[in-house]
Image (cartoon, rainbow, N blue to C red; front, top):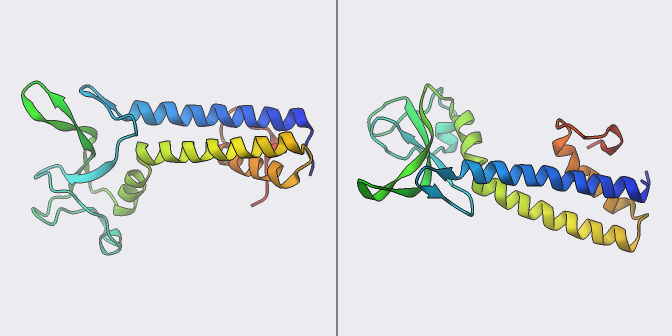
Length: 172
């Protein structure tokens, strides 16, 4: 389906707004009282009892709850790998994203950890580069149906956000 040039331009503008929103949220999530991490924080789960990092592996992913291998606690905390300076400790402290949770399923923990701000910012940068290339392709040939489809395919990720138009939907 060939879209009019104005419709493609509207889609590209709207898509960039969604990417801007994702970037703003990821940057805000990478800020703690002690500072911020420009490239986005990397998050990991730790035992809230003894601070042991809790790797999520295919074996632990099958467990009912995340459990510390050191102290057997099921209390977990999602913290940044990066630390921020504080007055009383030169080593700094991580950003406590989720300061404490009990009986968290490993699959839920892995999902949160996998989509940390650093990954979101990399995704935003990659999608912006793709949008740039698609816009250039469409500027050269406004009838390029493949470029139009690719632009709509990137946008469908945001179909649940205000402003998404039904004509932008693609069947995947």
